[in-house]
Length: 467
View (cartoon, rainbow, N blue to C red):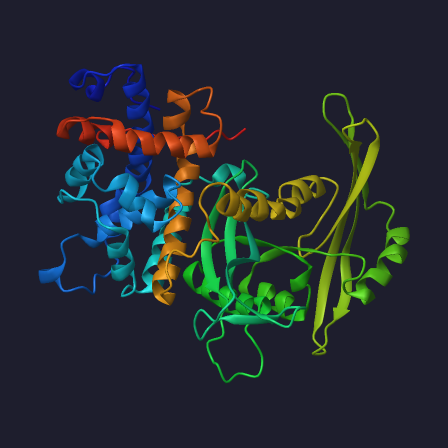
């Protein structure tokens, strides 16, 4: 395995002080990560069709999409900040000129105008291709469940809310004060890993397509559409879905069976009453299906497992299903040293035994929360401003949403990749700090043409910590 040398070409051709050198490393990690995995930004967006008139278009489409990604990667928080922070900044312009051949940063409104005309499906394909590339290059192999399955969480979240109707596709909700709330949620399928990755795999926008329909669109309807798209786009990918209790029903069981997918679905004591009623009796009959595990150096974390392999279930459509249930009760001391117990219970179609339940629970079922922490929470509260309305146009708004997902993938790869970790072994404090440093490097670092090219030129490898 080879990395850049401490004194590589860029540091031989440029005169840097310590701050400049750190900025060069940040830029190298950002541009080098995209170059290494996806061939660079031009190649990343090469299959997105440009519907504009080439005679009246100053900026290449790849350059506009790149600035959109930079807006999110650098946590600019709005299109207006592109104008005030990047436009007119000479060193930003110089770098953009070397990458895209135009000596001016595009205006935020230029992005919005161009994005109105793009095909949302083509930007979605860019997102899918990025994750597919990581899978094909075996970069995510260490975190497969049971050495085979990629854990994919499907969950919905709110994105935009309005006091007045935003578009004809808005969902509506009556508030207690009698007013109507208009909102746009999305359903996300994110590939999550135990080391903290949460990559958007596919997005289904939840919206009222037919204004004459008697019922609104909802998360369950969106899930059925998403599942069909996911299977079509990744027909041979070994998937284990991680779902909350909303999906505990016959249609989901049938979809997973037909598509060959595994699943973990959260089962509360109030879900599927016929299944829950059978559990205690079946536990008594299968005392061998129990396991006690002690974790931590001081053996302070205990996990008690119980599982049932075959439970007959008949859904509301009179369809028969065979389900399994895995239960884990974890006991550990709280901040005051008092022992507290938490129960986790899932429906699953895995076959289980004492040698597999620990892996299935901790590296399978319990990863579902990562879509909230590493996924939605980071994108809403970690600087990406997911809930900001980047455009009033329906199509452009979706393009900005997908560019946010692209930027989040790149930032995660950058933060955990050896190119960044080797340059900053003690880290930089947080992802927000990394994005701030990336912005400062883009705005302030002076580089020659040769120096900029050497940031991501040559051959090198990027590895992730698999511990």
